[in-house]
Length: 493
Ligand SMILES: Cc1cc2nc3c(=O)[nH]c(=O)nc-3n(C[C@H](O)[C@H](O)[C@H](O)COP(=O)(O)OP(=O)(O)OC[C@H]3O[C@@H](n4cnc5c(N)ncnc54)[C@H](O)[C@@H]3O)c2cc1C
Ligand code: FES
Ligand code: FES
Image (cartoon, rainbow, N blue to C red):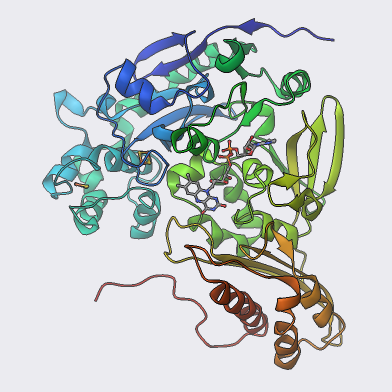
C-alpha cells in the first residue's frame, strides 16, 4: 500500500496574498471567511442559497494546466474546496493608474446601480464574462447574469453597461490576465500531491490527494459526506444547519475532471462541472445544448457537477432523465473495486440509490446518438431562467425501415419519487407506426407510469398534462412540423 503525504492546512491565494489555514471547519463558507475573518465586505450575503448572486466572487483554478477563472457563489462554497485555487473578490479589482476597473466604470456611467447591494455580484459576474468574451453578445450577457438578481436598478441599465465595458479598457491589460503566468506558477507550487486532513470528529475535513486516495479515505470513513460542487450540500448547511463532518472535498481532484470519448461513448468524470461537461456535450449531442442555459445560473453551473446531480438521487435533477434516455451507465467505486450499472437502475426509491457505504460515483458513460437515432429533452418550469424543474421529459427513438418504432426510451423528472422510465408508454409505441394516432394512444398510458404530486412548482394535473404533451411535441419535431414549438426569447417591444 502506498503511503500518502498529508498536511494539516489548506493553501490558496486570496487576491494577492498566499494563505495557509489550519483552522478551518468543514462547514465554513467562503462568504463567512471573507466577511467575518478578513473584513472583505464587498462580497454580500443576500439569499445564502446560491440564487441571488450578491456573493459572487471569481475562483481561478488550473484545468489541464490552464488557469481558468469562473464566477461562483461564495455563500455555498466551502473553504475545504479551495485548496490550490485563486480567490478574487471585488476588492481586488483595479483599473490603470488607480482608476476604477473598466467593469466598475461602465456600471457607474450607465447607471447600473441604485442601492448597490447587488452591484459587487454583478460586477464580478461581468468581470468573469469580459475576460472570456470582451465583446459579448446580448445572449452571452444574459446567460452570465442569470444567477444575479437586482431589485431596484432594472436590468436594462446593467445590460448597457455590460455592452460597453471594452470601451473603458482592454482585456489584455487587465491585471488578472497580465499576472496569469505568475499566478499559474504559484498555484502549481501549491499542488504538492498531499492529502489535506484537518480536525477530528465534528471538525474533520479531508481533501484527498487523488482518486485512489479518495477511495481509501471513503473505505476508512464510509459515513463521510462527499462534497463536490456543494450546490446541494451548501444548502444543507446554510438552510438546514446540518452537520456534514467528516466532510471529504472532491472538487479539486484532477482525476475526476476527465472527459473522453471512445467508440461513440463519452465518459464524464464525477467531478466534471456542468460548464465543463456541456462544452463537449452540446457539440456532440446538440439536443442537450439548450438544457445547459436552463440549469441554475452561471455560478451554479461553474460549481455543480454531473456526478453530484446523479449521486444526490433527486427526482428533479435535470441530467438524469436525458442520460437515462440516452442509455447511460455509471461506474461506482469502493476501494479498488469498480462496478458499472445502468444509470436507471441506480435510482431505487426516494432518497435511496444503489450505492453502498464507502462507495462513490466515479464516472458516467454517455452513448452519443448515432445517425438515425432521434433524441430530445424538454424542461418545463415556471420561469425560464434559474428555476427548478416542474417536469422534464427526455426521449430517444429509432424507427425501423417500415416507419414503425424499433426502440424507444422515455424518461422523466418531476413525475415520480425518482427519475423514471415511462415503460407503459414505451410499450404502447414499440412496433407501431410512428404516427399521431399511435402517439395519442400512447399518451393515454401515462397514468399507468406516473402519479405526480402537487407542490409549489406545479399541480399534479399540470404535470400529467405537460408530460403527455411533451411526447406529442417530440413526435411533431421528429416529423418536421412547421408549427412553432418553442418560445425561447421575448423581445422588448
Ligand atoms: C441556485 C441553484 C439552482 C439550481 N438549479 C438546478 C437546476 O436547474 N437543475 C438541477 O438539476 N439542479 C439544480 N440545482 C441543484 C444542484 O445544482 C445539483 O443537484 C448539482 O448537480 C449537485 O451537484 P454538486 O456537485 O453541487 O453536488 P454536492 O452538493 O456537492 O453533492 C450533492 C450530493 O451528492 C453527493 N455526491 C456528490 N458527488 C458524489 C460522488 N462523486 N460520489 C458519491 N456521492 C457524491 C453528496 O454527498 C451529496 O449527497 C440548483 C442548485 C442551486 C443552489
Ligand atoms: S447570497 Fe445569494 S447567491 Fe449567495
Ligand atoms: S441596485 Fe439595489 S438590488 Fe440592485
